[in-house]
Amino acid sequence: MKKLLLSLILIPLVLVSCKKDPEPQPEEIRSYVSILSLVKHNDNITWVVDGVEVQNEQVYGSRILGAVLLDADTEEISFTAENSNTGSVIESLLLTMEKDKHYLILLYGTADDPILEVKEVESDEVTSGYIRFQFLHASPDVDSMDVFMGGTEVDDRVLTDLSFGEFSEAFEVVEYKARASVTLAIHDETYNPENEILNYDYNDLLVSDASYFSVLAYEIGDPADTVPKLWLYDLPRP
Image 1 (cartoon, rainbow, N blue to C red):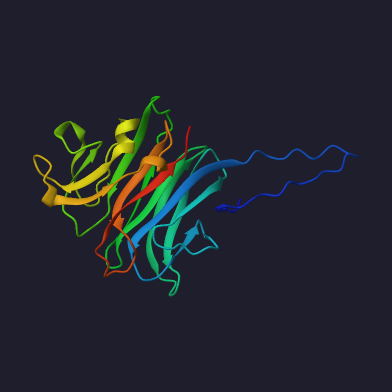
Image 2: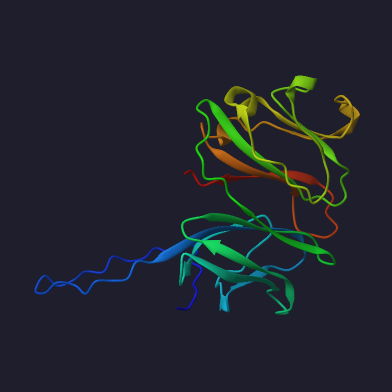
């Protein structure tokens, strides 16, 4: 079976004549992906999934959501990122995908040193009254960082010394703290205002009992850009 990445495609309802019973159709085996592009690059990205080119080019900071049709409950599928202008391969990986699981595929770094990684999305439910986060430090020009939520005291620190290219473990934060503030600062024993990278107020962006993936990267993909930004992506619920 040819592998297809279904990216925001609405499948039309097929009407069947009542004069005869329809032929039974084999069950589709699907696995799901969220593809994020945060590589500092002047050009857009074209993805090729097991030899099938995704039609829409991906711009910096955007996400492609889709499903891959598998031939079996577990199958190896290739993902290749290409320069949309030149067709040259930026990076590729081979992912063992499983039925009904959801994966994050992340392209980040620089044009000269791109990084392509994958993470499986946790499928268990979030504790009621909490919000789940996972962070990635994807800003090569920024030192290791600490993350605070709901304030900048020691007890507000949720991550310590997260360096470039490092993923945090998924963790849960009580909802009111997550909504109050998110502060990123260069790693130190305690919070130092002079070390602050940025401060965000998520507030209305967050949904109760949901999961999010946050990435420290840049505002735009221009290789000359040095303005940091904390990108926030919602993750599928179980």
